[in-house]
Image 1 (cartoon, one colour):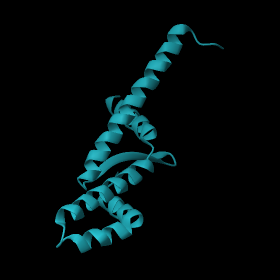
Image 2 (image 1 turned 90 degrees about the horizontal axis):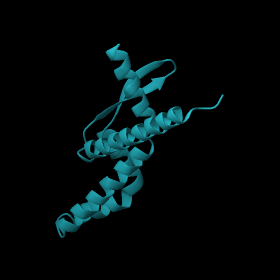
Image 3 (image 1 turned 60 degrees about the vertical axis):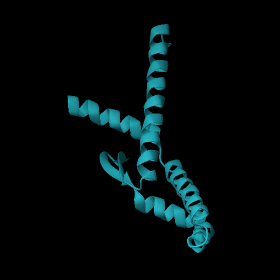
Length: 122
């Protein structure tokens, strides 16, 4: 059974809105994680939706995994070149946050948020 033009357009509009909402969620998560705060999100586990969070521990683990040598360098520079140490630390923090974001499915998260809001409204 084929879709009508109106159904097709609605599907495109819904997909576009979902994509924009997912990008917004990703940006909100990025800003929260850069501040080393927790960002709560839903995740489907079997048949239930459970709220999880990404936070400072995830960023710290990624930071250590990705930037171990840079962290050691930054710490060694703190007394001699504090500005360079801070620059290195900020760059490493950004890498770690992007790594955490890369492991999250913001489209699925956004769909679950929409599903939860519809369930709450009903």
